[in-house]
Image (cartoon, rainbow, N blue to C red; front, top):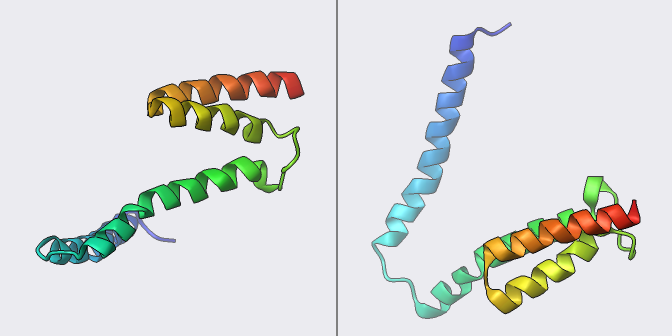
Length: 109
């Protein structure tokens, strides 16, 4: 058995290593001029990561592939994406997505 001190020491150590592994490269890169093509390429990383996370949750709710029209997650994603594309409002798209999901979930049971 481990005691609380060991657990907290491990957590603190992991936090320190995580901070160093993330901070040092960012600090080094922030002092240099990144070429425009690389900066443009890097600008797509957050969008790509978010899309991959959302796609997995929409297509595989509860870890099971559901690509049919009876998938309320997939159906709710459509008006959510359309709302964001038209308004560019994250809050608006979130509210539409939540309402659409609840409506489709109630309709599909």
